[in-house]
Length: 133
Image 1 (cartoon, helix red, strand yellow):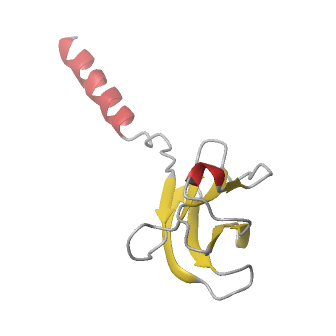
Image 2 (cartoon, rainbow, N blue to C red):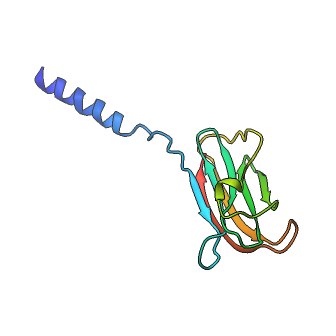
């Protein structure tokens, strides 16, 4: 009887170890690639799928953030700009995407942040990172 119990315990332990790991969402925070103080930052919070940007430097440049992901062959894109003033206190210069973004759990997201002189101008000092919803 002891051998049967031991074999059953091993079988259960093996089955449990083969169970897929729990989903691990990944937040992102990415900064522009300009020299010195990084003028822009974008962030993505996986819980609730929130996206925002901050202008971090008094440099006469605005910030553009872009969040993209592909699900079932369709690419979705969300953009944010901040071009309405540049203060040295970054708390005064953040924008968040106003609507809920419903990204399916486990989907990879791409976040890009760049500096711009004005909306539509060429992008400068861009950097990207990836996360997971």
